[in-house]
Amino acid sequence: MASIADIPARVAASVPAALWARRIAREPLTHFLIIGALLFAGLQAVRALERPTVRIDEQEFNQLVTYWELQSGRPPNRAELAAILRDRVDEELLAREAQRLGLDKDDMIIRRRLAQKMSFASEDVGAIAEPDEATLRAAYQRSQAQYATPAHIGLRQVFFTGDRGADAARAAASAALARAKTGETPASDPFLLPLTYADASLDDLIRDYGPAYAKAVQTAPLGAWVGPVPSAYGFHLVQVQSREGAAVAPFETVRGDVREAWMAERRAANNAAFLDQLRKRYRVVVAGQTP
Image (tube, rainbow, N blue to C red):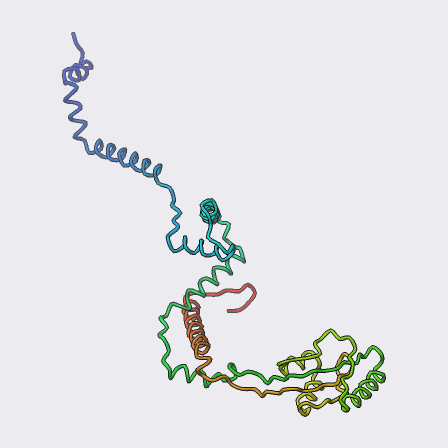
C-alpha cells in the first residue's frame, strides 16, 4: 500500500518532461538569466576584439615627413619612412602606457609642459580680428622706440697696450698722434678687438671700451685722429670715419613687425583673461601661508 510520501514522486513522474520545460521557459527568472548570459558573452567578445587605436592622420604624417626633410635635406626613402612612422607610433605607445601607469603625476617637467601648451591654446581662445590700418599706425606711434635704429659710427683705431705701464702707454700714444697728424699711419700693438668698425653702435663701444671711449668717439671731428683715449686695455688713437644718428624706421618698412607685435599683445591679453577666469574657479592653499 502506497504511503502519502510517495504521492509527489508519482505526480512528478506522471508529468511529461516537455511540460516542465515549458513551465521553466515561462519563468521571468529564466528569461533574466538567459539575457544576462548572452550580454556577458557578447561583452567579452567585444572586449576581446577591441584594441586602443593609434591614429596618424594625413596632416601629422606630412609634418613628420617635412621635419625629416628639413633635417636631412632630402625626402625619406621607403625604409626611412617606415622607421619614421614606427618611431612615432612607439612614442605614442610609450606615452599612453606611462599615463596609464600614472607616471605623469607629480612630474615638474611634464606639468610645466602641459601648462605651456594650455597657455598657447588659451592665447587663441578669443578670435582676434585682423587689425585695420588705423589700429596699426596707432600701435606704431605708441612704440616708435621699438622700431628705431641706434646711432652708428664707423672708425679705425690704433692701440697701445697698458701692459707696458699706463704712463708709457700714454706717452707712446701721444707720440704716435703727433706722427699721425703729419699723415703717417701709426703702428698698433696687438689687440684682440677689431681695429676698424664699419657701423658700431654707442652701446657696443660702451660695452667693449667704456663710457670715456664712447664719449670721445661721439665728439671727435670726422676724419681727424684724436687721443690718447683711455680704456680698460690701455690707450687708443681713434679716427671717426662716419657717424649716423639714431632714426625711426618708416611705418611702411616695419608694418609687418607692427602687426606681429599687435597680435602678440592681443594673444597675451587673451591668456591673461583666461588665467583670471581660472583663478576664480580654484581655491589656492599654500602650506604655512594665510590665504
